[in-house]
Length: 184
Image (cartoon, rainbow, N blue to C red; front, side, top):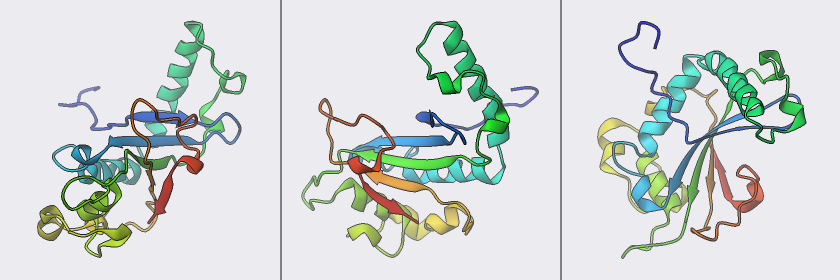
């Protein structure tokens, strides 16, 4: 925390790193079904936090931490890909990639909405992605573009999977063949 009153509000469910140069880093928020999309720690808060991390250029602070984690995993005997051993900050891309993954994207409830439609309802005014209803938070506090301060350079990727626990069958979390992909 180094003199701060509280820790950074970085909240990444998963951090993934590619196995070859240039080493790409993916910062991932994972949501499972409808219940995870709304509320205080829902999709809106994570979009806002991810954008703040991006806008404030915090990735340069995270890179050495990632290298340290990889080094510690090696010291513990964890099977780390050879290409990641001896990794240096300059080997990592300048910007991370941001992903929002929603698992169990299956229709539910009386209205038979999918989590993809619900996600849209919490983020957008225009009812994209087949959205049937825009949430009160969008109408009262603004949409996705307000959350990201109309920053056209912030380009997260939304991945929606129909997979359910315990049979996910996803072997590479960022392999787009497992998902419906939506970009902004």
